[in-house]
Length: 349
Image (cartoon, rainbow, N blue to C red; front, side, top):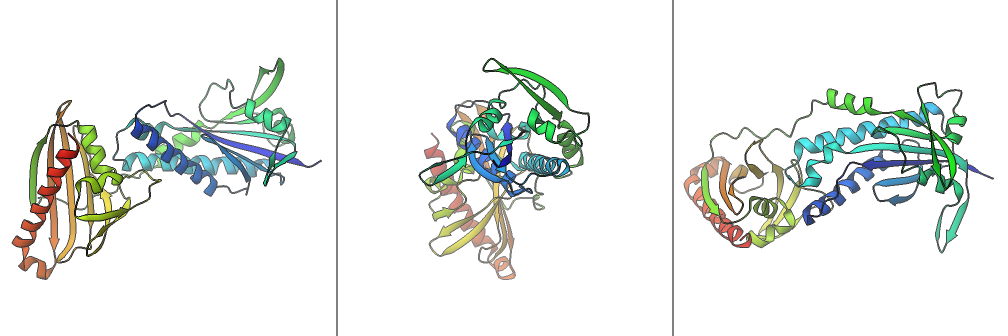
């Protein structure tokens, strides 16, 4: 009978959120991270299925101990590079987005017989070996990030695995089940120490060409959601026909989307600025007629639970011809944004 290596990377660390935005964003973030793990599948393991926040994979080609540890190291490094970069570029303050940086990754590995089951056109591993690795998802390992070997797996690599493995025994179905684990926390610390990445540097925006200040009788989080969530843009921005964007990705600094207008399309990129007491969202484009670059930043400052100060700053860099019409262009764009803010105020009441 064929034998296989069973491999499960499992993401943990999200709290249980109840807010609709938090649930939606957590789904997008986990999907993005699972795709990242699959993209870094250096051993060409076969994906059986996605199980919540985990991947269940297997291979009949048994790697060496060094190759397997290399696989976990690659996945873990890329995982933490991504969550670190995500944190520096996020614009959303919902529970899911704020805790992405705290997510952890553990690996469970088992070696045993391979039995397949076929149901309709679906063929996948089945039997006691599959049950064993799944039982160990709920273990008592006292650390957050680790690689766990079942006893079979540890025996297979006993000549190369070294001595820095901790053995534990737990009772499952009234039977003792031995396993070994190795702490992987040093990889996360290394990524954090070496990471010099910062949020995408904003353009040298200094003095705005125009500023529009409003006071909204609405909660700051609601306003921020309508401003930063691209799916809501058409509700308050009537200058656009539609927005084309990746609905499976959470908007953050560097995210690009296309605004389809009546007379063409403009590509925008999300920008922001650091602030301790405000929420700031903005976008930039380089495709407007008579304008080399256009930026806007919306700054939201909470007065109380249902009152928010909204400050919109507009920045324009004109072409040669644009400079000749600077006053009229600025007047038109300012008037256009005043109308957008009126609608935004209405929909967030």
